[in-house]
Amino acid sequence: MPLMLVSGAQWGDEGKGKIVDLLTESASLVVRFQGGNNAGHTIVIGDKIYDLHAIPSGVLRDGVTCFIGNGVVLDPVQLITEIDALKQKGIIVDSNNLVISPKAHLIMPWHKLLDMSREKNAGKGKIGTTGKGIGPAYEDKSARTGLRVGDLRHKDIFLNKIKIVLQEKNTLFKHLYNLPELNAQDIFDEYMRYADGLLSLVADASFDAEAIAQKEIVLMEGAQGALLDIDHGTYPFVTSSNTVAAYASVGSGIGHAPVIENIALVKAYTTRVGNGPFPTVDTGEDGKRLQKNGHEIGTTTGRARDCGWLDLVALKYVISLNNYTSLAITKLDVLSGFESIKVATAYTLDESETDKFPSDVSELEKVIPIYTTLAGWSEDIRGITEWNQLPENAQKYLLFIQKSLGVPISIISTGPERNETISFVSQESSVKNLADFLKAQHN
Ligand code: GDP
Ligand code: IMO
Ligand code: MG
Image 1 (cartoon, protein in one colour):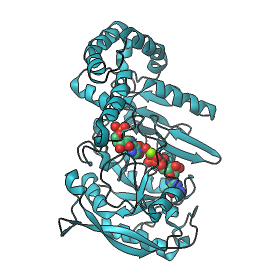
Image 2: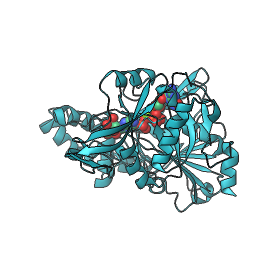
Image 3: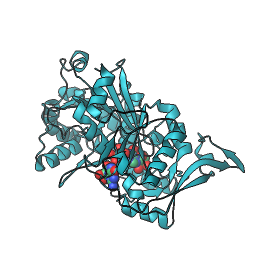
Image 4: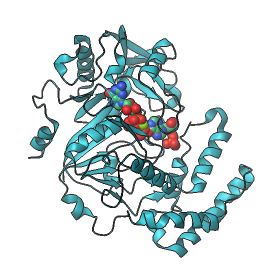
């Protein structure tokens, strides 16, 4: 049961969905271990576009089992909508390809309402959440008042728990947010309508360590990105789960298996959606051009993502957190046509130069990036599949990143489609075929 880990190394939307779908060719189980439907992954296969939020990005491959682990917070209404949307596109999601941990926490109506009410009241200090109830759901998990998927099996207890939780939440809605109170029976009735469908997907005792141990390669799919991690990210402008690769064991219950590859997803430039510091943001023409060429619009909220240059200070920090074995550089094609490309290699903070990523946002807000400028390339590189076909300046850009970060590049993405990819081109590796590479690592 060797593990392959894939996680975002920036502020999310690095193209994890595309790369996980691609790597799933070699995996038999794909696991989501944190986050919820705040995630939005767009996967393009031929003329079809799939948007995934809670379901792991392995679902588009036949014969792959997808597992939603205990670390995830799950909105049943959204899950049903997502399953229906996939069905419309010919992908059937049922107990043959999706298994849910009974320990995953449910996102309840009060979580979504609280998330939105807080953001509305926060004014300038708002985080810019996706409004999906993620933070409040994780809060209740930690407070030990959360409802879990497995609780749907016990109707009386479920209703009782809703009543207890609502005593507190309704006080907030009524007195703080000036909103109507929520009705326990209505919520119970609604969730009971989802119960059978959801429980038909819940892991029974047979889907345990033994079943997982038999899987050939298990792919752990991170959502969001390391800089949104609740502990290690740009707190408080983060999400409410641990997004670093190390959380994969905790959020899935699959521990102590050998990790054959731990891949950092790095977009060839940087984007951020929501509030919080973003040192290399470009608010001028270049940023607009990255936004337009990269179609940087959020899959979950439809918000335009802020865009800017690659930040090696932030990436070095993220690498120190994750112990990655290789980098997947995505959206390289978006940089085509820029005469020059900037890369932040250090910051100025309080008039001193530093290569340390500050842990305090009040400091991060003050840093001024120090850029190295590299020559761009004019050729359209979309769809290129061979290293040798890349323009020399594109190769130089990639080698600059690899050398600066000290981690080999294993994958380069040159377009949204599966085949628009260069795999295992790192200078050290002569292996060109991903499946062979993984098997070689495994043996
Ligand atoms: P995720 O949340 O990390 O899975 O990323 P998103 O799906 O939210 O955002 C990435 C977007 O870029 C999606 O629309 C992908 O289809 C697209 N994409 C992925 N890789 C590439 C690439 O190499 N080039 C281009 N042009 N688009 C890409
Ligand atoms: P994927 O998996 C980009 C951001 C929100 C906000 C902050 C907190 O597609 O990369 P939350 O709703 O989680 O409480 O919002 O985190 N955020 C993301 N940004 N991609 C995501 O997921 C994100 N999920 C949450 O914009 O700034
Ligand atoms: Mg996304």
